[in-house]
Amino acid sequence: MPTEAFHAHVGRLLVPLAMPWREALDRMDREGEGILLAVDDQGRLRRTVTDGDLRRAMLASAHGAVLADLPSQPPVVAGVEAGAAPVRALMERDRITHLPVV
Image (cartoon, rainbow, N blue to C red; front, side, top):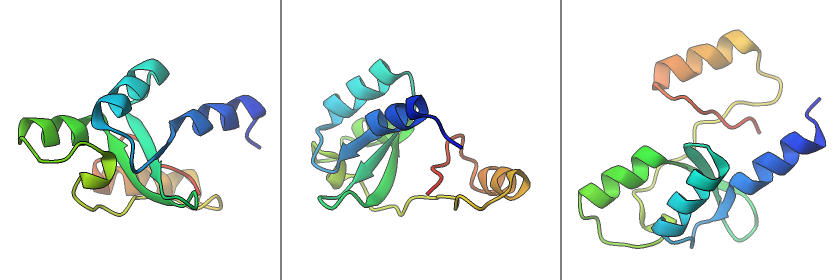
């Protein structure tokens, strides 16, 4: 069962879709994670945002300044009932290093 400290840490990774890119990078740096969990106004996870997503958008001179302006991409997630082997397979299949468990 996750601890209060775990929940507090995950809570610091939740950010609004209206967060500016620069602020998102600052949050990633401060939290020491390469991922943020972008949520809508109702707190529903809408996408994960990685440092690579932001780097590619900035290098491509993408127009926009907030997370909602990034190309739409549904988040890859695992359910709380998922076992370690299926989660590992999903991460390898999608070539990801972070996977929200919802």
